[in-house]
Structures are given as structure tokens and as C-alpha cells.
Image (cartoon, rainbow, N blue to C red; front, side, top):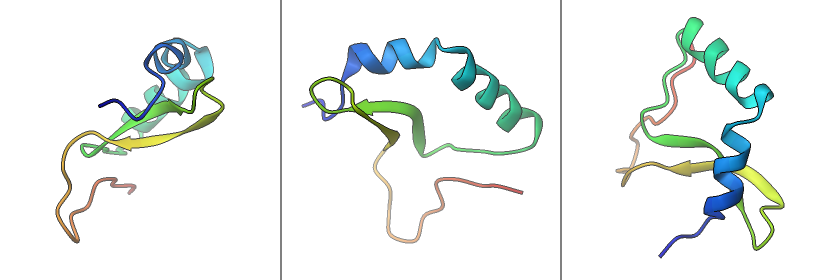
Length: 66
């Protein structure tokens, strides 16, 4: 079962602001092995956030910001 809006998520990931943010994160050592970003939630994709990319265990780090 998909809990997010797949089509809107695909559209968001092509927007320049999200591509630039991803590049900036990569260049500055931000790691996010446990999350997908951006992800659109809701019937119309009205809520934008992150989603777990895998099952996360308690106390497992999923985002590293130096």
C-alpha cells in the first residue's frame, strides 16, 4: 500500500529547487540513507515531507547532518 502520492512525488523531484537542495546536501556531507525526499502526501499531494525509505529500527539514525 502506498501512503504517498506517487505522481506528485515524481513531479516534485523534477523541480529545480529540490534538485538544487539535493546537490547542496551531497556537496556538504548530508547523508539520508533512511529517508526519501521530497515526498508528496495526500490525495492532491498537498503535504510535502519525508518518508522512510526502509524499515527503521528504534534509535537508528536516518539523517546525518555534519
